[in-house]
Length: 223
Image 1 (tube, one colour):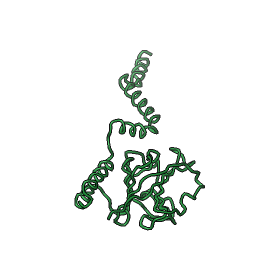
Image 2 (image 1 turned 180 degrees about the horizontal axis):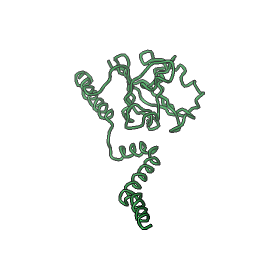
Image 3 (image 1 turned 90 degrees about the vertical axis):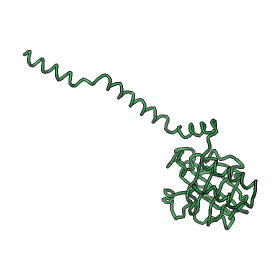
Image 4 (image 1 turned 90 degrees about the horizontal axis):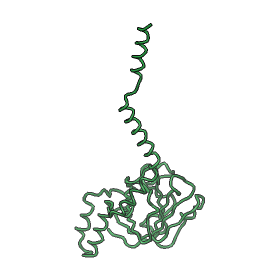
């Protein structure tokens, strides 16, 4: 009987978890749960910290330098082009410096193309034709600091600059309006006078109940 009892005691000891290991596992579980709770708010926290600390996106640095160059000497083409040395601008692209967006503009007949870039909506215009160029993008398929997301489109203030590179020309737009519509309000894609850029994405965050729309008007075209 004593032999049997001793064997049982040994088995119990083996089954006991090391106290140090138990503490480590608890910490890991708590950190994971904390991350799950905070994950939806992390991009907003990061954005506010950037603003507070004055940390610029790469796009802000490049395009603010461009404005300084143009103000100094608009004929200095060499210096203007040098800003793109380490910045991929192949093909048609959309750049929104103030929210760190730098994304390819893609064509297609259905929303599956959104996994490749920002979708220029069918039957809407193009920058070189004027009218209403409409571009939409995912808001939470990617999240910042990924630069292929419209996550922070709601942070785009009036007078913010938006850059569209289209057929080897640079179209500079300035934001003048921001508003919310229902998904069925497709008139936002209708024809407009002038040369207008309409951007939109899902709203509120993590839902597709509404659409957040930003409108900008053409300021300048550069070769």
